[in-house]
Image (cartoon, rainbow, N blue to C red; front, top):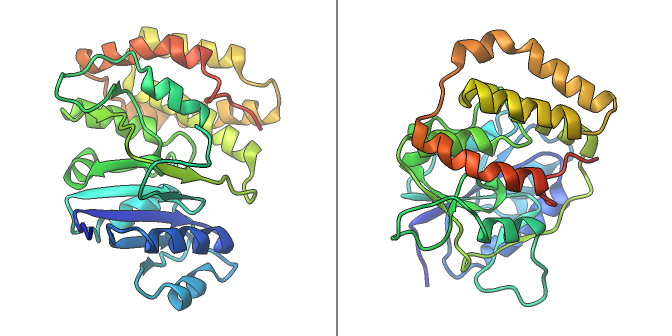
Amino acid sequence: MTDRRTTVVVITHNRRRELLHTLDRLAGLPENPPVIVTDNGSTDGTADAVARCHPWVRLLRPGHNLGAVGRNLAIRQVRTPNVAFCDDDSWWAPGALTDGTDDPIVEELRDSPVPGPGWLPGPALGSFLAAATVLRTDAFRAAGGFHPRLWLGGEEELLAADLAAGGWWLTYADHLVVHHHPSVARDATLRRSHGIRNTLWFTWLRRPAGPALRRTVDLARTVPRDTASLRAFAEAAAALPWVLRERRVLPHQVESRLRLLEPAQRASKARRYTG
């Protein structure tokens, strides 16, 4: 079943045990895909452990934490037409789940209200989860990859919109299975703060004035009223000079799809800003 059309790209930071477990799983895939790991400046011996235990993996060591841009670095090395992303605590499965449970986001993806062409193999989507997505390598490159300012936390939304503006479609593929065992080595509060900030930046960078204002007000009303949320809004506002400089409103057909997703965003059980 060897299939060399897809390269798996993994980013990691100080999660040696989780990453080695993920690489064990990827090594067992019957498709035998090439795997590239970007070690984002780990200090727990992650890179050395990968080199020792999985010498078949292409290991990149930028020397500091690039966040999601670590994926951009890996894409430069990809020679296959497709790239499959996963994180150090998730991995692609060769078949369907037998002992897992669906993530809450799965129902939202299956029931996506976004209209798409009939040739898509599943519902059309407005965004994606970086740890559970296969993309065309040339589409990723053409769209510019992940924005370096966003780092991590909802960084997919901007790239998804730019892919759509470039004429690409995202679809939910029910037959592709990804296992996710969330790592305990994460700062949930920092991730929440980055998620709020990045949502604001995406909204201001790409949405028309009306929807951007509506989304901003909705976030201000619904996020937890604490220091982390205040810091997120302050960071977002402080960046207005470069945001306005890089602002590029989406084409009407793409914006119309995003508007259809607004009710699902407000009612979402999977995309709460918590932690």
